[in-house]
Length: 109
Image (cartoon, rainbow, N blue to C red):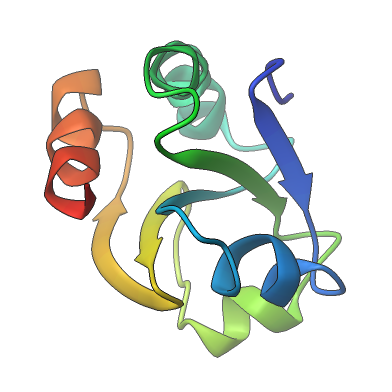
């Protein structure tokens, strides 16, 4: 379910891919059975193309990786976390318009 500019991450590589990243990272916590997750996927893919080279876009399947969502208190999906310097700087819960996600990205840049 990830576009060309979106990387799938898991518990094992989360630190390397997200926390240690030089650039801001958007993490989309999702699951295959989640309809709202599928609804925002095209917006995530479009923003990943638009912000290529400025922001890293990742997806983490909560069914396959339960440690990381637990560490960040993810209680519902979709949840989008924006990390900068290894810290959460923005959190969005639910299926939101593309503009809301873009606002969160702009704050992190």
